Length: 256
Image (cartoon, rainbow, N blue to C red; front, side):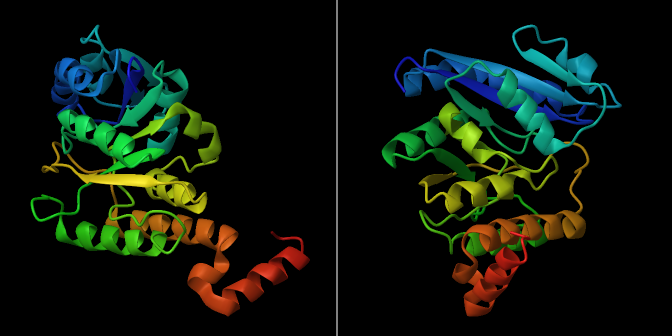
């Protein structure tokens, strides 16, 4: 990665309580990230996803960060894809605008990406020092256990909102959902390719402002998108012979 450039995408929807802090921290982290990784530059790109509060106005006050605006709310996953499509970096990364993740942890993600010769590095939030609510902690453990049945490297945190990957990977990921289930779908898609995923622990703090996540509704979406990808590519891995029979029947009926 010597001499390469890096774009940090920050998707934001009604994050007026946290957006100034996370942009400030990302901008302040640029020098250290470059110094520790050998990258030539770090770009900070904020995507305001149709916020109805002061998020856009606050983000506009940071001329060193680029701002892309959705006139209406289009979803977390769509905001990330808009950021990736407008990014100038050779490497792409993202973290949530809620202040839960530390931009300095990108240094460890790049180290994991290089050391493990992976196409994507994921920040693992599921550890003893994590401030994640217990029900979300357990749910994320369950999703990761299911994805780990796919080929490639087992994963510990399938829904992490902080990761780094190579730009070349992006076209291979599509299509991905536009909602909050973007991240587990992304993990499942990479795993279904048999590609290597690197993980490293990252600090995870309590969020600033109100969460957009509905534990039950979004949890079911997480599960359905993971199982959908596994069923499409590797039905025998998790569903056994019965799953294989259903897949074969779907193919014969022209549904696959």
